[in-house]
Amino acid sequence: ILNVEQSPQSLHVQEGDSTNFTCSFPSSNFYALHWYRWETAKSPEALFVMTLNGDEKKKGRISATLNTKEGYSYLYIKGSQPEDSATYLCAFLNTGGFKTIFGAGTRLFVKA
Amino acid sequence: DTGVSQDPRHKITKRGQNVTFRCDPISEHNRLYWYRQTLGQGPEFLTYFQNEAQLEKSRLLSDRFSAERPKGSFSTLEIQRTEQGDSAMYLCASRTGQGEGEQFFGPGTRLTVL
Image (cartoon, rainbow over all chains, first blue to last red; front, side):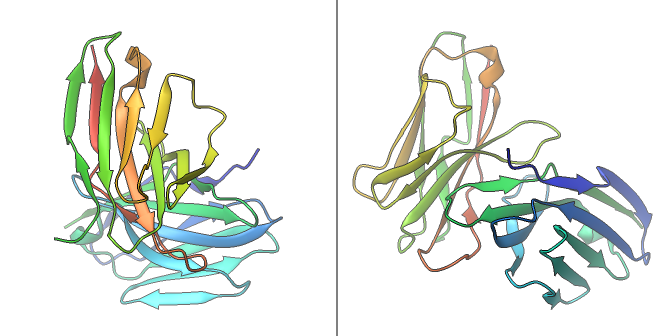
């Protein structure tokens, strides 16, 4: 059974705080890990596609790291803004399969 | 707008009725996914198409669910004899056939079964 875990389930921070979330996934048969941001009343949008162990990607104030050997990825947001409020989903893709297994997400609330 | 579209956006039905949802992917995307999402959970994989071929279907999916993609373009998801437990957001996503690329999601169809 492929299981993807995200923590924390929700997070409340003040504007300007930096924060990070964790995604844990199976360490075998790894193919790729995706991070998505899902704002209320919108569609999920991709933030990062990560494939290589040790990968580190950055988009503005948001960055992500990947450890495929131990099966985890971190998403960091530096200087959180109210517009960062959303659910952040990670999704695991394994080799040879077509499924994409999503975690339950981390719901971020940024208070001005 | 050339993104993924889904129709209808909302559907309210009575238990026991059949419903059908449509997804129009981005035109050059040959891979198409259906997901179901309930409150507090991430999207749950339902099925996957590569062109018109349905290559994977979740074992959690009952026989009341069927999906088609007859010409490798739009797809339909049908739920027969709906149950209250089918109430959820049904999301469609598409992507190109190259590598491990991101998926592009539609706005979803919110199903409520009374």
